Length: 299
Image (cartoon, rainbow, N blue to C red):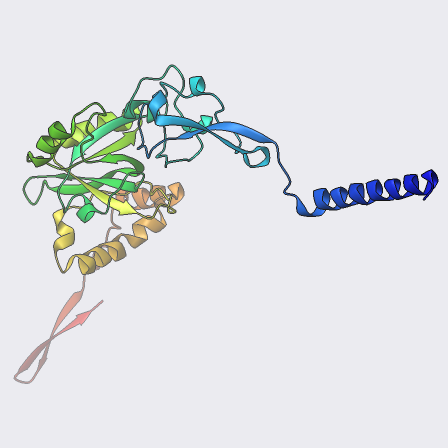
């Protein structure tokens, strides 16, 4: 076998090997993707948890799967507070953390411009435990008193529930938390309000009874000008009396905005009643017919 033949066979074997490697690399071998290290939760954490290094870990994920706003370094998450519950291995997102200079705990989760106000409730006034954090409620105020003084009105509408019950400090030991749980304590609900609403609620708490009315979270309607309810609505005949009163007031309402009609009515009331003409004198004539005596009148 000549040298030329050997070279041809060697080139053929090399070409076959390169072709086999190319087919394997493009069709069979697993593809490697660029990886990025992101910060994830090392454990389940509740709303208001202040992050420490032990709460976090770094994991490598495909670059194309990195969520928007993911934290890439520990220093960007440590000492900040989570604004929503986080599960183990869930990426830490910057928009779900408090500002770097915010105070720790639940207080940093309150939106700027709002205030957290706590009210005591019972199973009845708290809608039998159906009120949960982020629920939407109306606040009802009942003023005690006699039948003429008592009333109930809606003083706040569509406000958000911040939390329910009492929150234990993060640094509290398990033994202290268990002892506190055994201690009798009235249930409470904390609402997020504007400063004016917070003052109104505090005044109502000292003047009467507060209760909550749970609403559908999709229902954002606000009723304007609703009058307080008084004990007369409990009278079975209230609807009939209210209907009769409306019927009697109907003519007045029809002309309430008509200044000309009111002026005409006032003028008629001031007019003196027309004077009656004096009766004309009548002539009386005595008529005698035999023993009969009659009188006839002539105008």
